[in-house]
Length: 167
Image 1 (cartoon, rainbow, N blue to C red):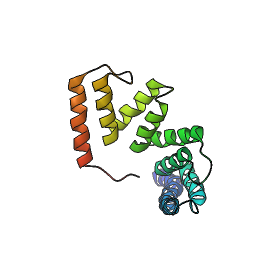
Image 2 (image 1 turned 180 degrees about the vertical axis):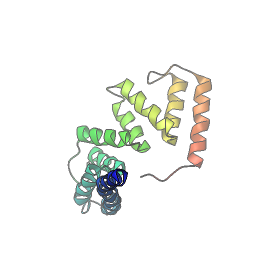
Image 3 (image 1 turned 90 degrees about the vertical axis):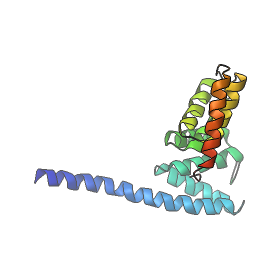
């Protein structure tokens, strides 16, 4: 009997999270449609993305970060864009890892390398290609290594052939 009671408590605790996740997916879908309508729909898209990101959606955090980075639907805000993109990256959104890595290049090479490596681990083609170039040229704190550069180039080509749609 005690085990059943604990299961019931667990289900009651987790059920709202499952519903919030489904709601966040719907909200992200609506926000993406608004974002693509142009300047008229973009302010509302920002609001929807922020709501869904607050509910745990990595995809929403990614799109909100992009909108803030590019000044879509309001003022451009690189600091806020970086925060949202890092949240999306922490939630395993590979494009966010890649964009964040490039945003960090000018000021924090070690963190930029961390996120580029994370995007490579997720087989994100652009990250694999960028790491190939960095290894070939000995940039971003990577040692010059032609064999590894060639390997990452092959990995990028392979990943491009198996590309998954963005969040």
